[in-house]
Amino acid sequence: MDQVYATNFFFQDLANRTGREGIISLIASMPHENGQVAQQNPLAGFPDMQRHWLQFGCDYLDNNVHDTGLLTVDVKPQPQSRSPAGPDPPWPKGESIPLTYHPAPDIA
Image (cartoon, rainbow, N blue to C red; front, side, top):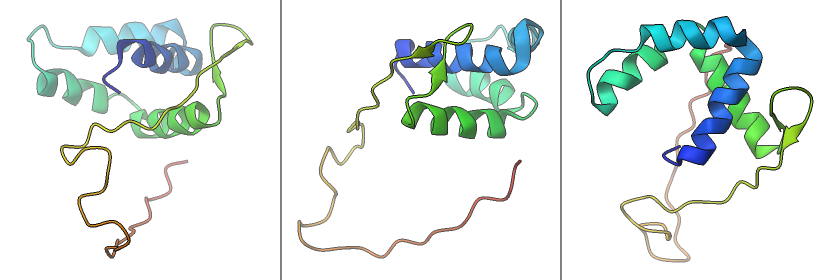
């Protein structure tokens, strides 16, 4: 989620789940150094982040992200083509490729 506006929804949703104290704890854990990797590692290490991220993704796709309070944010998920291959799959149209699915472990 490289979009600043969409990122705001994630942190609002996280604040709804963890409270202000959770967000303050997350901010306090962030390093002072720049760089995406330096910032990603503490974010990924936040307690239950995998569960929070999964739930936010589900809520986002279901248009069920809440602002502060009970109001939902009118998000309209759009497919994005940020793949290096572009918006079309990197194989000829009409052909398919085998995909392997590995179920995620239960994180509930």
